[in-house]
Length: 65
Image (cartoon, rainbow, N blue to C red; front, side):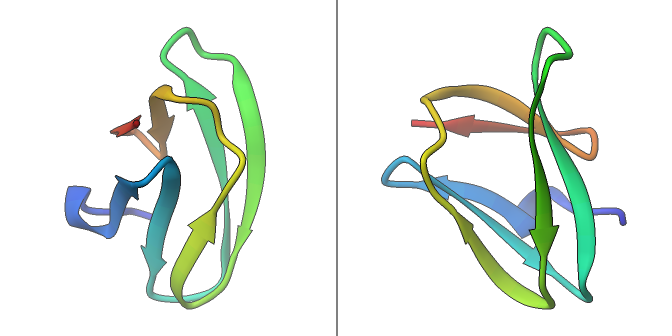
């Protein structure tokens, strides 16, 4: 599933991913370590409990702060 930068954002320490359809994506650190496999549903998904840092979601870089 391809995402545009606007489909993935961080706010108040949470990660938000807006999907067109149900999908599974992988969240990686910038060092390439797998952090979490995410089961996403169509629409806006909120992912909590992620440490602050820089991550990659399907090649899109996101800063969680």
